[in-house]
Image (cartoon, rainbow over the protein chains, first blue to last red):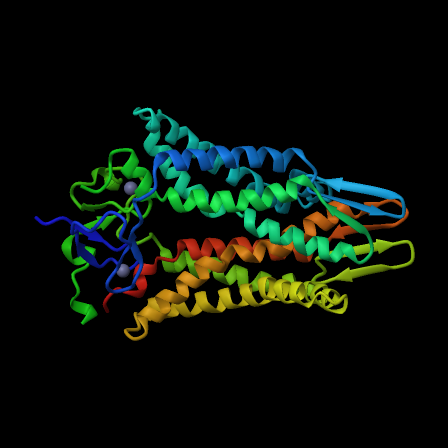
Length: 201
Length: 204
Ligand SMILES: [Zn+2]
Ligand SMILES: [Zn+2]
């Protein structure tokens, strides 16, 4: 039987052909990308993940924004934004913010390193299959870029009556956003399975 | 034409939505993916019913999300409540119209378009409308892509409420509108997730 692959978006069957590894194939019926580029190396992915974890550390340790008004000043960190909501008794909203700007990006990077580093030295991590599935499930809930734009909106609204200073964490978030998007585009689930030696035959 | 296309359903094949591996029906033990062990389904279970329920809830909450104040600015002199719309107007009056447009699109246009688009998609998947499948598939992907950007205002409000707590100057209190708005965003994200795109392409 010839190898067949189904389009996950419209269920159309395609016969697998030996397409060049870097070609992006699209479904003939609904144009969904079927196989993603396989030109990334595991070294680049690990480097980006390591870079993201350093930036994430900076983004969470240093203040995000500081505000000076009438001689008083206040500043907040990334997690402080979620805690502020919690203090005002909007617990569900605080959890939502905490999950999407802290837990999801952190889990994304940690789980990637957890599976990539053993792969790099030619082994496989304990529970690798489960963790790869976890990565693809966590990824859509990491909203760093949206948070960044939200902070810009908050800064603009504050700027009319207070002196606001963007902190180190805000700049780290900018770099983190770029780093995460570069990392995500290089670690699609097809790519991870390929590295795990369980790619399509 | 499309009715006779060779699909996974007609060939007895299944694709794993987590890792995109295609396998034979019979080869999947207990209907789990041979590679990543994710649960396999021919179509997402109860897709239309779940999506409709989530969407109806989102549409109901969209009303308080826009009518109730999302934040309350208390100063010594006055006490001012802002809904999402009045927040956009404040930004517009302070002269930062690009930011005002951004908030307007992300907080008002995007959620409304998402609710309408998903309603259209559910209806056409339910009736299995044969024409314009490509356009509807693109509509679904657009909804999927813009989904998270509605969180923008929630993040802005949470930062404002955390920062503006200066004694003797002003303090910002979050309003229930923000809660309803957050619920709308999460419900529409979940509705997008439970909708099975393949239902748009299934033959009558
Ligand atoms: Zn397709
Ligand atoms: Zn799978």
